[in-house]
Amino acid sequence: MTMAAAMQSRTAEAPARSKASRIAHVDIVTDLDAAEAVWRAFEEPGHLFTPYQRFDLLSPWQRLVGEREGARPFIVIGRDSEHRPLLLLPLSLRQSHGVRTASFMGGKHTTFNMGLWDAACAAQTVAADLEAMLVPLREHVDVLALTQQPLRWRDQQNPFALLPRQSAINGCPQLVMEPGGPPASRLSNSFRRRLKSKEKKLQPLAGYRYHLATSDADVTRLLDWFFRVKPARMAEQKLPNVFAEPGVEQFIRSACLAPRGEGRVIDIHALECDEEVIAIFAGVADGQRFSMMFNTYTMSEHARYSPGLILMRYIIDRYGERGYRSLDLGIGSDDYKRMFCKDDEEIFDSFVPLTSRGKLAAMAMSSLSHGKRLVKQNQMLFDLARRVRRAFG
Image 1 (tube, helix red, strand yellow):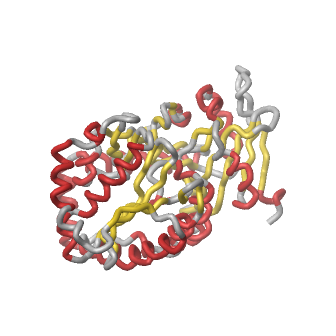
Image 2 (spheres, helix red, strand yellow):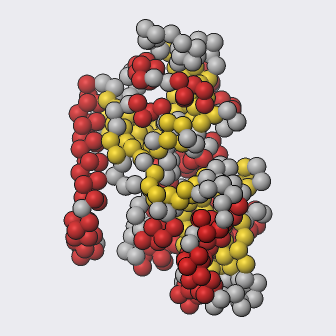
Image 3 (spheres, rainbow, N blue to C red):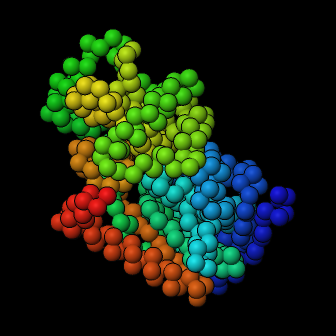
């Protein structure tokens, strides 16, 4: 596909007030290769984005998973009057029942979804700028389904919080860390003592260690183990195995092997001994935040010493000592997350109709999401729903 075919440029209708950071032009790019150079430039300092929106994470998702699900790249680049890129939206477009829906790339595998912004532009953006940017999309899209967006990132408001929004179905527990704070400010001494007594049972194992996988061989070896053990763990919990879906394993392997600075696009932390891998946690980091994507632990008798919790303590201390400000274990309120994460990240969804056909779809999506949230919030209903699902699963 030529770049001309992959890119359509539209001049956004300029709102009445003019200002230096105004989004004056909108490019719609339907080919990953054509967007790559601009996208990577948004990952440089001076930009606001979450590590889930890196090109080396979303491009393998789009090629290996999204494409198989019938999602096509729909990358929106907002530029100022001098054509400098101010915003990149990594979306993919699906058509179902005659409705064209654009959503963030990444599907079930990204905890947070957000555009990549010029940081100064993000701070000055007003609702009129966003409205003008959406006008050129109407020819191609009926509804924007923009889910799991953080209200703030790196102490800056997410500009999309200016769009109509509702709270996401699930919250995201997070641990806020005081940079340079003592270990007890991250995890209480009593919790540390409990974990230490459990770890004493593992420490005599030959070659027992915690480490961050740095070599390709380590990354591959740990992933080979993960893809063997995770299906067994999920079957045990009667959960569907999202990692068995077409293309997902190749996508995960690609992002875990992609280099980023001294680490990888997805970093793998492991607790192991010479005899076996005991636990892994994999996630994305950006210098201020570590965000967990997937994890599992051994099926052997060593599982009874809470290796996942021990590994989590190592990870929290590692990032705490490096001046990180926060850490999360992904969306959802599992008990183990609450052991570490006492705060909650505010997350919202926006269902924005762009055409009259999209209005009905946006209302349906919004109502469905709201209903699911109410069920989740009512623990009794949630437990009942879970029991019914097990009975008929």
